[in-house]
Image (cartoon, rainbow, N blue to C red; front, top):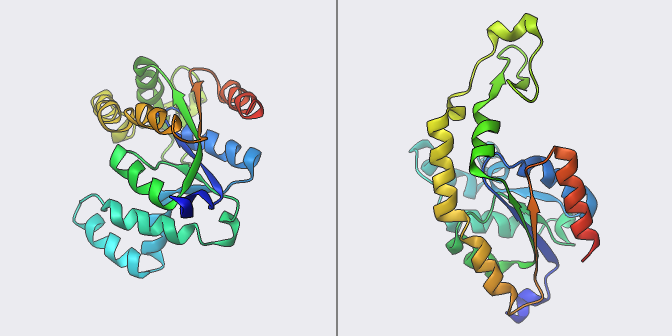
Length: 218
């Protein structure tokens, strides 16, 4: 543990699907100066560049299997050796389980956890109401960001945006990821880690301001 304590402090950001983590991660990265580290992006880059870890991960991905935690941890370890990570990083999308959090604690000094909370029904409304323009890739929402009338007829709902799929993802989040809040709570009692809980029900700007306010109070 002494080796970890000498590492620069990093941040973990997590919340349910559709909570706006990706958008807020970019803003948090700007505020803190810590680069946003997405395991999904790292996996795609490793596969694209045909690295040894990328080759290994590709075998699982092509077989439709989850990439083992050990490979993800190795990717993170390599990423944290890069120069822009010298002051710590912002983990976006990892860890997703307590087992992953335990592995991460062995290689990274997580000093801050930011939890974005949004009620399930709000998440369902946000995601199920999304529509995409297949010609431009632009995303609209039937309630919050309606498309111009002249393109409404060509909009589509992505297959991952159906209510059944969203509720299945939410169930997985509650079973696997939400317990991280309690785990990190226990962990923080033994360390100098800070935990921030933010209401993600507002607009992007409102949530960003809430996070900025919390960060300013640390």
